Length: 107
Image (cartoon, rainbow, N blue to C red):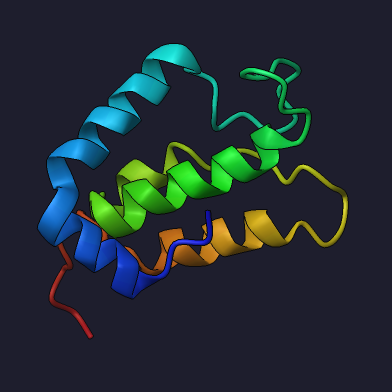
């Protein structure tokens, strides 16, 4: 749920295929997992959308090591008007990801 960079590196090194399979399944079952305040749930989880979004986003960032450009596609709006910690964590994670756009070489 709260994936750290160290755990992400370990899972990438040792369980990448299983993580890719799990993420592909989740994308199939819940294709709108990244939409803020989406009104459907998987199973019986009323609050699961808040936590699933953060977990899946961090799995894409820290295990799959997707680019900043790719991660930014999954940034929706905050779920709350103020203090949405999970959204702030996702923003920071996206900003820390490597951008795919080449630099111009100008300092």
